[in-house]
Length: 531
Figure 1 (cartoon, rainbow, N blue to C red):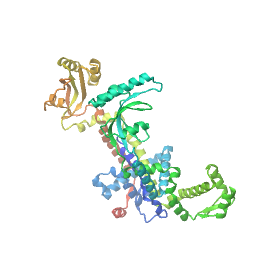
Figure 2: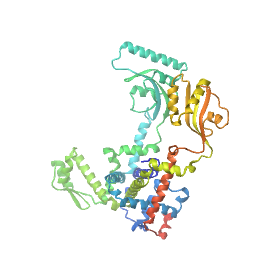
Figure 3: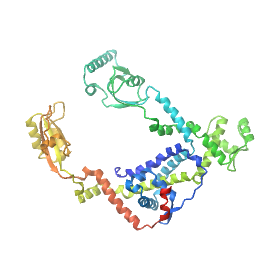
Figure 4: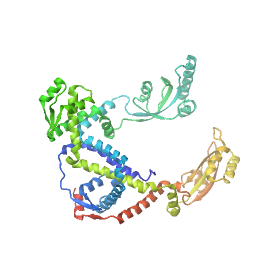
């Protein structure tokens, strides 16, 4: 499925995901008792009422606004038209049964669980806890990350003393050469058992490695040193300091919302829920439970419903803790489970966020089925052939190959045999005729070159400027032709996906509108800017 054209709908899904953390930080449970205020019907789409609150909820999302031009984003009618298209796609997805698929239901359930957790969490307490954690790691010696490359020799556990001395002497000589100005990167390529740069974070590498690299500044390299893996000389290429608290606050909060770590952030919410749902403890039954380990009497009532010793015993079997810990966890779970079952009715904002996410999932899934899944290579090739002139460039480009050779004879030889071959075979022909290596006779670069992209093409194809010959390969020739536009659809695939996808979407939406009935209450729409 083409990823390039479906990003807008994945962005819509991501914006809905982000609302989980946003809600945590807003402490929305404080309005837990808020009932639906006056919420008029804004429109009717295929016989289904759409409330003003739903329209505003969707229009506020980042993903929705990315699909609307800046000029239209402040225009009520344009937003309403875009929203109608959104609802038509959702209705089409429902009619196709996409909302009954197990994958859809699992995704919606996961989102609801995360959203519920956000409502049952004290946002202020979460932020304080996250700040304390951030301050702790900020003062650590290994805060942040460093990007390094190293001259590394692996040492086996049973290496002989003689072999070890030889490796150590070799690394000492390399270090001495570095001090005299030898290229570190060249030494990595020639001598190291590991040649790719990599990022190092705290607790990722052996202590000896971290102790060394975090003391270096970018551009500095170390003396030879040992780790359990071998012997190293390390150079720090780049350093990233610890991001600001604002940048990583949400990540810290997500990590902390696990098990006991989140209990402190739910205490205030738990007490408010107890009050709301009429939590009434039975002290005598609780004392009996603490003394005897069991009781047949109700431990407490919640919204008039008794929670007795039998229910507690069932809970305790799967929660091996001390009796007091079990009792508190049983109370907590009972209160939160009750809130879970009633939150859609009690918190208007919760049901609104859940509905918006549900619709965004359906919108995404039906779009992929009706548009993205149709963007195969045959369709893209046909669209390119029918609209080739759209992809002409403002200036001609040169499609070919630039050949640099050590001798004039090699340059002429390469140009002569390439002219007899298809362009798709040029690179293989060069590689087979002039093998790559330290003393290769020919180096070549193939592509489509716009004016200004390559000095040698500018000189030899466009007659602009005078390119300086390469020192190692001073004889340069080119083979190819000037073209007005791409010759193959694959050269402009990303643009084709966008253009062809937009055409398919327009056709699809025209079919949906033709069989749909939409009524917009203009007097309600006029109030949008007042909210």
